[in-house]
Image (tube, rainbow, N blue to C red; front, top):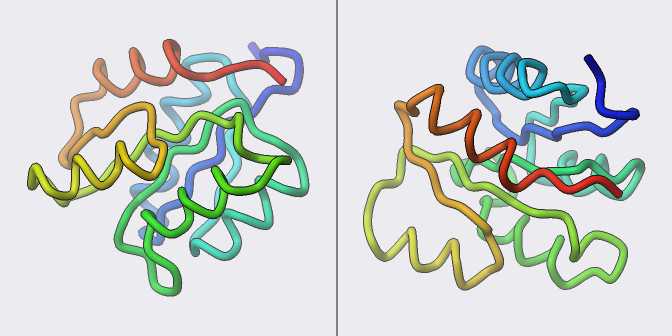
Length: 126
């Protein structure tokens, strides 16, 4: 069940978590694409625009806030919705996520139903 080639790009450095989140994207009918670093996530978003980016904040190279800012500052990628999925639960991080353009902010460990709802609600066909 693929939504006309629409994909969800998961930017998460933990391969197991990345694959798990990707499995939920597939349950929602999207192709799952993976990036293990922020830089790779930005490159992937430019190569083929996803319907949605699910973004971790603690990445090995560029943090998720910076990735989100770069995506939102670029005309080619600014319309891609970004959901932050992170272990950072503080209100300051949540506010910072919204300020840099995230449409949603979910915390780990995540509720699968909440993630599925967020994917279905925010993923936009291009």
